[in-house]
Amino acid sequence: MLTGKLKKTLLYAGIPALLLLAAAFVFGYIYYCDNRRPNFPEDFTVFVYPEMTSAQVLDTLCAKGNARSRGSLERCASKVGLEASLKPGKYVFQSGCTSIYAIRKLANGWQSPHNLTLSGTIRTKQKLARMISSQMMTDSLTIDSLLRDDSFLSRYGFDSENVFAMFLPDTYQVYWTDSPEKIFDRFRKEYDRFWTKERLEKAAARNLTPMQVSVLASIVSGESLKSFEYPVIAGVYLNRLRRGQLLQADPTVAFCFDYSIGRILKKHLQVDSPYNTYKYKGLPPAPINVPPKACIDAVLNPQEHNYYYFCASPDFDGTHRFATTFEEHKRNARQFQRALTIRMKEKAQS
Image 1 (cartoon, rainbow, N blue to C red):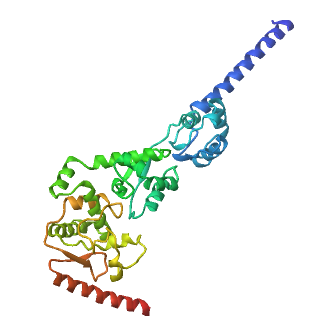
Image 2: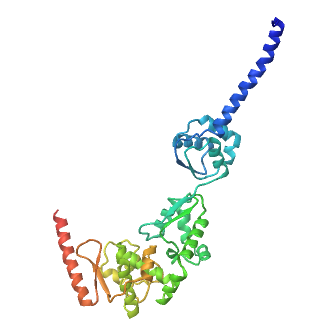
Image 3: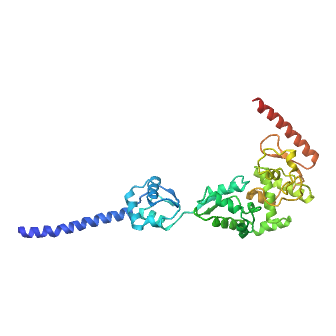
């Protein structure tokens, strides 16, 4: 039998062992929670702005990711020194992500790719700048000023007048924190990629430079929102160019007035501007908007026909009626004007 003294000795010797075992269990559990256990049950995205603190970012992680343990995140943030190493950016987290990985991602700037999309009608530098800045960390004033900076744009082979040609509507993968210079670099890269040898050869076959193709494409874009009409309209203007006829494109007149007029009237056709295709033959000096790729390809692959004229359809469905002769065109125009008069009277009476 054990004596009392021996029992005490064993007891005193066992307590430290139990404490060590308990400590090992606690530290092991903490390590498991921070490094192995998934802390987020769902996918989520966080945007970290330059002015955000680590505490604010942790709040966002918990709110958007429905974190199981904020304490785990706080421990990892302290261990990594997140307050001093936090990097702005767009971060996408997958379900099952651990606390330590999430914190290291933020501290090391392991950003996720970001989609920058140009779409719709872009007729002014202000709108282009707003569209870019609304999707990126940069501000619209910076982008707008660069779009007007000839010295800056000369790096890319453009100037403030023809810069619309460099921007091709599409979706591009970038990083949300990319500088304005990197954004412009990306668009120039995509411009070079778009203008393949085949497209360059097609332009040359029509005695057009890539810039002239973009100019004509911008007019086509201004004339219709129906993509199936693009090749037909492109063919009309190419026919007029070959004949040496005035283009007489209403969108170029609207451009002269900064798109501030709703309808083109006879008085507007007198504006003295190289962009007024009712006064000056040939193409305007530069694009009047950011032409979609489909319009550029329509100019390079126009529909072959004998149309020289077109006007809006009296059906008011956004389509146009095309004509070979001016007499035929006048008949189409009269039908449209009659339909428009009736439509306006009905609208006034309603």
